[in-house]
Image (tube, rainbow, N blue to C red; front, side, top):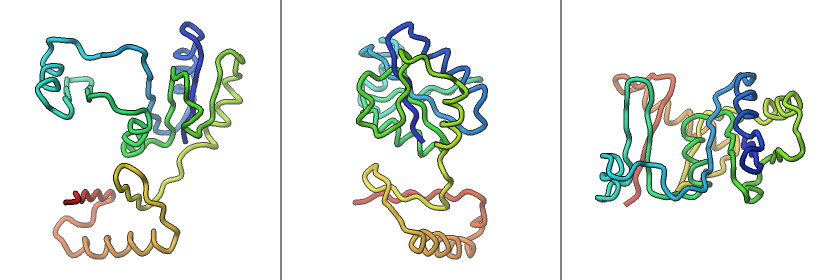
Length: 175
């Protein structure tokens, strides 16, 4: 589910990922790890909102959306990508990515894109009917609990007006 591409600046990471994305048939989120301290522009509204205390600043334009947040760890960015429904997450540019327990592609080894494509297709996330996250970490569920929770929630929601949707999202905040 997580494919990491590492290499020095100018090693071809971005081009390799672009070519891979063109051949993949799944929902992919790419996380670019940057050595820069900041990427939002100082003085712009989004920057000013966060400096004033906003947890995040989201800019919605006609053709794209950007989310700026104060510094989060790479693992937290991966959790956000999972919640976006990614089948495959590609992390690019990180020097110390081995701690992620992922498949690492080193650009110094001149990887064969067709071999990596086979690996990426095998790594695609298997869709789960239900996922539960507690404090940002996925709660492991066996098949019995997964079916029990899923069927119970669907049965309860089916009695509510508009409760027969294809995709159901429930957010519960602890106190």
